[in-house]
Amino acid sequence: MATTALYNCESLSIKTYVGVYPVGPWEVFDFDHVPAYKDRLPYIAIIGPFRTKRAAHYMADHGRNNPHLQTVADAEKLSKEASV
Image: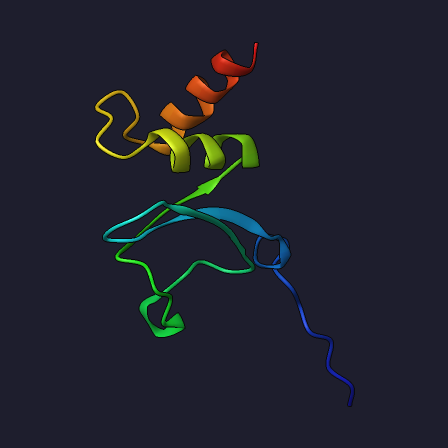
């Protein structure tokens, strides 16, 4: 009897995240599932997922010590306003 694998469309999509290093610039990266501790990524924190790469890059460039840029929604909004 053949079995058919059922795939969750959400798990197949690539999401964009920002990796936070303790020192130095933040890094934008793509991941195919929600990052977990077992993935052994070199970051002290991970922010995301982001809807757009523009917002992820905005967070990576302007997010450190910025009280106006605390969440993914803030990054999406401010990056859109900055691009206009």
